[in-house]
Image (cartoon, rainbow, N blue to C red; front, side, top):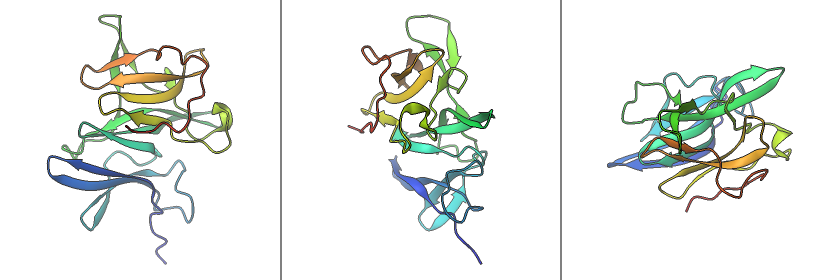
Amino acid sequence: MDTGINPQDLTAYSYNGTNEVFFNGDANSTSDPQGLDAGLYVITKTTVQLVPGSANLDPQDITQLDGKIYFAGTDSVKNGQINEGLFVYDPTNPNAAPSEIVANVEGQPGKTITLNSANYQLDMDSSNIGTQNPQAQIGTDGTLLYFTATHGTTNQGLFAYDPATNTINTHVSGTGNANAFNLAHV
């Protein structure tokens, strides 16, 4: 019996005449796809495909900005804790796998940092962010990508990534120790 893929976190994608839907799914699950086997899927017209290299990333909070798909994805498991970094996928290159973002650090020329859980822990699935039912943690204003994460030894805060300059703002001013939830796209 085929149990299906159990899609969650559907995001519509429309760019340069292409219309697709991306979602988190797990063909091995009979209920909730949010697990270590889940991957990023794309629906093009009536075809459903797993995005190459996305199996086991368990994409969460899938967001579109400037023709690219961003999501929190599993990059490690330590002491039973699922750790998540910020990933990007370019649908115009459908054979390329999603990758964690390596960005320049705002105000620090020549310094780059990987937006992985060792540096920016998005922690979408646990109660470490102050709730048993995590809410949306990634949003956009159409120019910048905002996400909540724990950075280094700081408490949860709001961060901004600018894809146009590939720059990360190490903390959005005034959001230190803030548990920002339900970020909305504007």
